[in-house]
Amino acid sequence: MMQQPTTHARPYRTAEPDRDMATETNGIKFRTKDVKAWYGDNQVLHDVCMGIEEKEVTAIIGPSGCGKSTFIRCLNRMHEMITNARVTGAIELEGQDIYDPAIDPVLLRRRVGMVFQKPNPFPTMSIRDNVLAGLTLTRSKKRDQGDAIVEKALKQAALWDEVRDKLDARGLSLSGGQQQRLCIARALAVEPEVLLMDEPCSALDPIATARIEDLLHDLRDRYTIVIVTHNMQQAARVSQKTAFFLQGELVEVDETNTLFTSPQDKRTEDYITGKFG
Amino acid sequence: MSNDSRPPSRFAEVLLRVLCLGAAVLPVLLLLALIVDVAQQASGRLSWEFVTSYPSRHAEKAGILPGIAGSLWLITITAGAALPLGVGAALYLEEYAKRGRLANLIEVNLANLAGVPSIIYGLLGLELFVRFMGMGRSLLAGGLAMALLVLPVVIMSSREALRTVPTQLREAGMALGSTRWQVTRQIVLPMAMPGILTGAILAIARAIGEAAPLILLGALTYVDFLPDGVNSPFTVLPIQIFNWVSRPQPGFVIAAAAGIIVLLVTLLFLSGIAIYLRNRFEQQRG
Image (cartoon, rainbow over all chains, first blue to last red; front, side, top):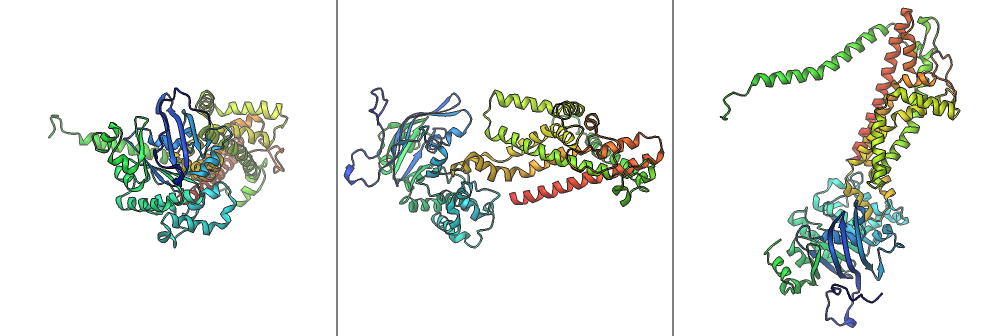
């Protein structure tokens, strides 16, 4: 890549400042440079520069409206789906800018899956069809191995034992927490490399939340996970890295332990100690 | 107790309820009276023979078969043209078009077109299809003119139906790496189908009852043959009824009454199919 222009406001904030490169097992999956995002005239992200490491869980915390959801929606180009929304800056996935005109956002989204805040299984589809939806929608050849894929995805999403006998029941017949795990299974069935989760537990009760958090521990060996949460305990429980956003700015990103025990920035400290937010 | 010295008026409450009930019941009663009256007149004439024979100079022999056949041909052509166009236009406006000047222009025009009197569409059809495109006074010209007539209604009701599909489902589909069309085809359309069908049926019911544009367009009033294709001349049920009503002999008035019953039954039959289809899709929707 080009050398950084000297006017650059701040360097990348990757969260392993003094770790020896040789011992590093994971690479940087995503690297964002000066990401700015707008809804109409309203700028919601200001110059976000951040690295996201492969096969780790990165949590993004911050008060409501701080741009954390917008940020992850930029990572799979869902932000641009909204009328009048736009993004500038560069976001590299394994070194390639995903906003390059040569990149097809449709193909990108097969590599970067997403789970939404509210469970949203497709209402016209059975549990099985929901899991296979990504393959059916895209007419993938793989759907020939449907049963195997359904079982694998549901097992990964820790839902298999609860639904194995009723795969033909409607996705909507499940409880909220089961529906959300179904949505996770649906995202995993496409075999993405990255899983973006936008407050996946905010509509769930504590038990369902705990199940999803357990799930994240199992998934992080295979996937790079970015989870937006307004729940700091959750961030502390599930993530290796945590990024703190405030008013559209990335304030601080660090090892989760470090960020919660000795934050560098006064604003981070105020937020995690509950002084505001 | 409230500070208001007047007690709440029970009387006004009851009065309003009675008035509203009256407003709801009156149209139904009127319609019922009309149907009963027509059915009584028609009772002597309604027979299998009536629906299977051709018109005649003799009122007691006149049948309505060409009208039924013409109406069925016509609505098939109308539906075949208006539904794909209408749903396609609605899909463009709801799923693809960016909010902007073009979308606004189309929107304003649609709203206006829906209010244009049907006879104007008859004129348009006469000029465009019959004369300019050389289709003659054929079923095809009539069906296409009717399609233009119902198109705004189909588009607007389809758009309503598409709007009821939650955005988050579209997002979920897109986030799985499917294209806009794949999401539309496999998620949005199945969910919007009941609403789209309802609108389509209302539109077709309107088309089947229209006489004015077709008279202008040159549908015949006396037809003693069945249409043999889309280029055939034709008549339709409302025109046949109109023709009979305007005859002086009382026998034809009775035939007209019987024709009205046939038209009503045809309409009910179509609505029945629509409701059945809608319920099926709704069940599927869960």
